[in-house]
Length: 508
Image (cartoon, rainbow, N blue to C red; front, side, top):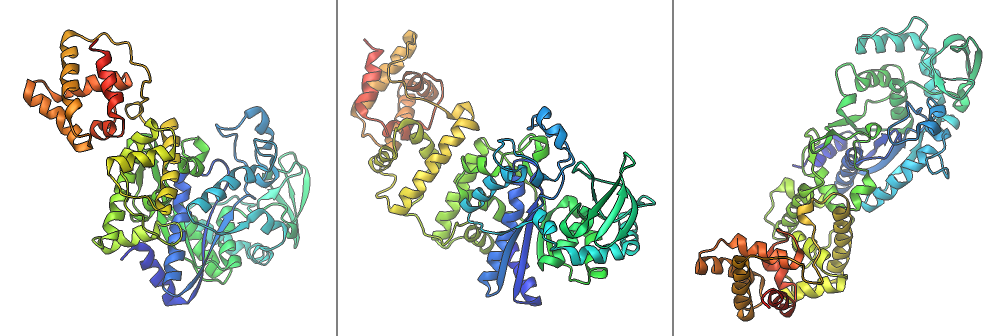
């Protein structure tokens, strides 16, 4: 049974209606690694609803959190003065919206493309509108119990004058301070400059520390399930303290949960926005079909890390997905893979007539000038007999992804450009002989992919010359490169006369 269905069954044993939560601090570009969390949550929402339950997906934007430092992708001169201030109160890099909106809006657009439509909870507004006031007052009135839980479970000792609130200083930054007085809803503290500052808790001047903020959201929003990263799941970590606080202090149920592993960028380590080591969700969608992105998350168990290779590895992933689709249509998949495929779909699944080879599409995207020419090439070669409206829509999306991939992440070995004019190459006498062999063969051969491919090996047998030498010469005269796409398909997609004229050019 697929992991999402296992979780859904456990949730439905408790009750029919559920609130599935996900969220992030929008401190920078929201990347594929963060996408794993909300896609994991979305899979469970779908599974609960598929089983007759009623699940709602919420996404908490933790924009009340402060800018912790000037990240590598920010201008130090512009942002140094904003360190410590809530993300919702800082201008974005474009100067047209707030910092949190600058990074959240593109992410929400990306979510639509992968078929995820959460209810967005603006955490900054939650504080400003007093939505957490009941929990805040309970926690502050029970600060000694809260302190005991945090110290006992985390194993670290809090400062002597610790108070369960992150104060808002006179300059607008969030800070620690020395408590002077607390009388709900006001708290007065002394800052590092020995100034006395008063916060009104009812209107969100300041915020709860993370270990208290998280269980407060569980209770206030009625969260019954949340997926979160392994950093929160360490012994004595924020989930351990949160579950104790929500049950013993706030008097609410502990949410069910799944801990997910990181997505690593091949050869570089785990993705993190703060370090700049990441591929944003939007960028990912410019180079990979949305259903393939979902499948990368749906197929493995959440507690297994994913190594993501944006180069040739991405090409292999799409090939695997396409093979999976063919097996799904043939009802030959085992249950877990079949369910992973279903959960990867954007909306209701509508089968394509036949999956065209993604590698062949990479070839045609570079050698043809329009989608119409690409379709004509596939029909001419005979790889597919007809294109439905679904096929054409898929083809359009995939061609756009391939163009984005070629521009940013494809290895040079995959890129090529057909030379309109014959490259100026001084071939040796031996190489000119190879060109003569090729011309004599290609004049008569039936212009089909497999025939063309086999002809190079027939020449190898006939002349006792390695086929790779014939391949190299053909790539040279067409692409001005030693290597290129799979030659049988590539030649079949071209006009015979163009290829023959190019060969003749070097035999004059």
